[in-house]
Length: 230
Ligand code: AMP
Image (tube, rainbow, N blue to C red; front, top):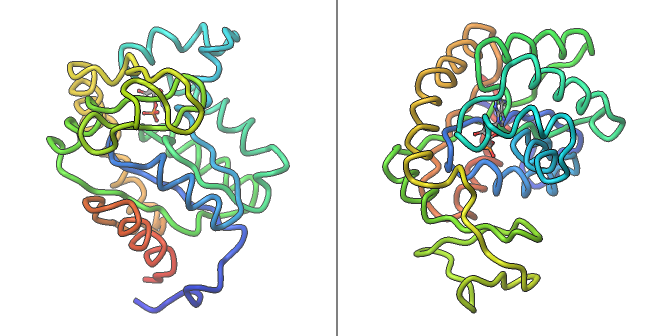
């Protein structure tokens, strides 16, 4: 592999897809990558949760699926992503997090990119064993106000149940309950894992990155992987 651009000279305007099982840390890494590359973070899970909280038609349509940990139907998701990627801030790049999750969504994304005449610069696949992820997710607590993320073992807030950053109340997301987490992993294995074959078959630039380690270490691996070229 040779390097696409010098690491350290920040590339601006990259189109990156972050992919991996529930709880692998896509969101945390995506926020950081988006800030580094100065492109928007497009997270379909966040868009749906905002819609749920504000009781929009999308929120009403998606609520039951999201709370059970099931996938929202493809046509709803494809339309949501089509509209979001057409916004001006995504014109020169984006970090796509949580989409596609089915082969049909991946094919639709391929069509959207082809119509726009652009291609992905990197598909980062974050990889980690399921059991580690189940522990990580079922122990996760989220600030209901600023959405900052904590963990009952590995990131304990200074005051129990209260967000260090904004003082908001920490809650467990309905879909982080252990039984639901296990169901989300089954969904991932059945419907989302096959998307990796689609990426490879389509010649998309897949980079598999080990997602066990501390956040900085994993970010370093992702950033380095961005600059690989087959
Ligand atoms: P996340 O925060 O990415 O784990 O997403 C939370 C939930 O939103 C998932 O468990 C699904 O119910 C729904 N969701 C997010 N993205 C998608 C997608 N691309 N396709 C279907 N459902 C999705």
